[in-house]
Length: 437
Ligand code: HSE
Image (cartoon, rainbow, N blue to C red; front, side, top):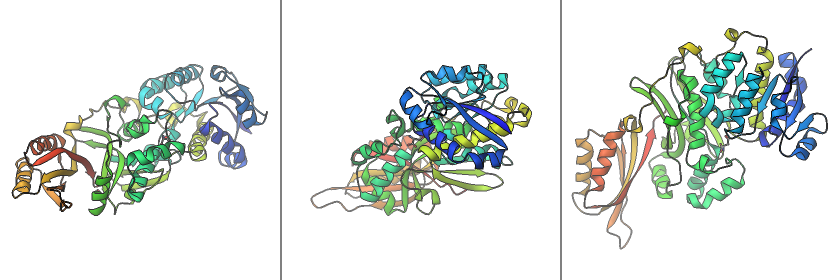
């Protein structure tokens, strides 16, 4: 029987889950691959925890470099996180001709280009299914299952922490501040929770999907990110009255002007399946020119769901270890010389529909002034909602949904509307996506 010797760096939530799944399902995994996958060494700062977890059957070290330099290890599983030490370890493993499996989205989004170049030079596999949407096999779907398509766009709920917060805000009428603590206690959040709530974690994952959807390098630095910290309960409520849900979406589109790469709160019609993805669950919609829109749903975090993806990558390594690089699926889905440096559109140049909320004096002519500004900029109104002022109030909330327009036109409209004397304070703007075609 062929064997694959694995070294795991980091035996935390995902590392522990990986060890458990590999051990529990060993017979089934061998039945599928024809290879016996053996964990022969693990590295963790907490050596006692690692020893307890592995029950004395595996060599344990506190120094991850020992795994990377272990001549018996065929494949290194990097589950340490971060992107400084993990980058060094992964590059060293590659230089030592070891295959690498990682769940580290930040590492791939920031240093993927360097890592893949090193991997190509050393003819080793770098697999990263677990880096995006946990247990959902979205990398496999984009790189292989949808390989016949020209991918037009990808949009996903790819951060469980924020989806949990938004679900609680909608279902229980709570504010962002009410639920953030609870979300962190549930254990999905990143070590630095601002990565979740400011959209950075989602941007890491979106960057990876964008690269393999369109065949371009990782462009994390150019991703637009806007989180959920400023979202107000009232907008979630008005959106619902109009038949929409607010989700933190990662959206990437390949347009003839360039690639849109953006993460921000987004209104989606409640009729869309993806609008009904609640709690910490993830979902990704991919539109291919041949297949049309396709939806992938599942747990985006957690020990065993993420381990499911890590172990599937290990199984791919087990099958492909003796293949030539031409027989393997390219890292970025396209042949390396066919990976093109596509331009990312600045956020001003993207196209979107919009939800606008403004607070206006309840006087004749105010709406006419607002709609004139929109009309002069060729922004077409799709729906409108005016709330009656509360008792003793002279101002009313007006909500406007627009058709698709250029973001810079919308910016100009917002500045002009805010300058009207009848308008109080700042206008709230949330982008909207159709996600149907
Ligand atoms: N912090 C991430 C989330 C974990 O909330 O989805 C999985 O990447």
